[in-house]
Image 1 (cartoon, rainbow, N blue to C red):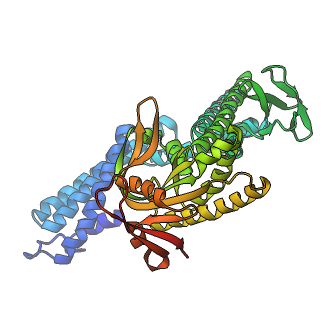
Image 2: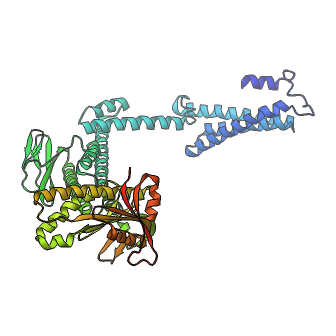
Image 3: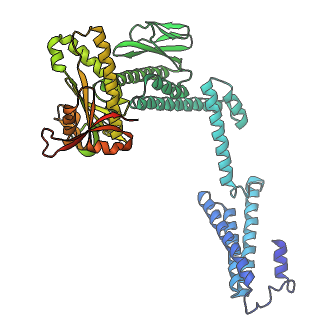
Length: 515
């Protein structure tokens, strides 16, 4: 700046003291724009620093940067060149005199001018100190949580703290460590509680919970009751009510399901009584999770025993689907019953009737489920199954026909086996099956108190009528079903039949094979 001032003030050293050219210099205008922007930004930055911490040095720098920006404007416009030029020199000289005066005052006050420009770098210094402080505090917290007592002493030496300040630092680190540990453990409890609502299998639930809990509680272990004993490794536990058991550096809490001991939770002993209370809360939450998992499993099994897996899965995933009502969709209905059931029932005991039905249905149900069907009802010796409802199937007609043929083969094996065991004294009933494809109303039918998933419509009625005309051991299908099978099916036409309840004749076919 001194060289610039000398060359600018001494006449003849530069051309800047001469009158400017009439035509502005284009490249000089473009070169001045970045300078104007940079000097303006520097002025704004210094002003923001001055507002946070007033300083004479900052005012001087703001003045200097503003004058430099003004010189850029003068250079671009070349208007009032001499006035702007000498005004700039005089004011800039005043600014530097002001800086020198500020340095003199500080020297008189403190005996040194070393901190004259501290206010300029104050923000960066504060950020660096804050980073060092945060890093040191994090280090102290980790040492406190691991039980290492030397961290505070080392940090005291680093920051040159006296004994009282070091004690305060130690207490602050311990308080922060406890607060952070409490926050993490509460978050772990919330996580375990959230997993309880998902309906995970028991082992998967416990594994997931342990993974989350160990991050906050340390080396946590869970043991479930097996063969009447509760063990974790070589340690066997026997609880008196809900009272925890303390062994060396471990605390063991009982896990209960429906009031009975189901397992044990083992956690490291904490530093405070609050840690023990949180561990007891964790044991209670895990007990609830374990009980819910077992209840969900029982409910899942019960649902699948009383309704088709597709329906049960849909209701467990979204209970709102149990609302009354339905929708019309295309499906294939399979209707089957046992020919000769009435005669058989007259000759055997009720217990034998139930045994026969269970044997047949045990053989028939997998044939339907394995082909993607949904069994919607058992009515005595008859059953109704749907394909393409509620789960969608691309080839539902073909799936229904395959299920029907599989049923006949499985039923024939059961009849042959039971006839051999009974020496042929009573002829066992034989399945006859009807399959039809078409639109039907599918949904939950009944009342708010009691309802069931079912299908209604002409498609289902025709399937029942086709079953009625089928010979024992055969499968009769409707015309729409036959058309959807294509050339793969082997059938025998029955012509157009006059079915009960139908005004028009219905084409029917006996299905004998389907690759």
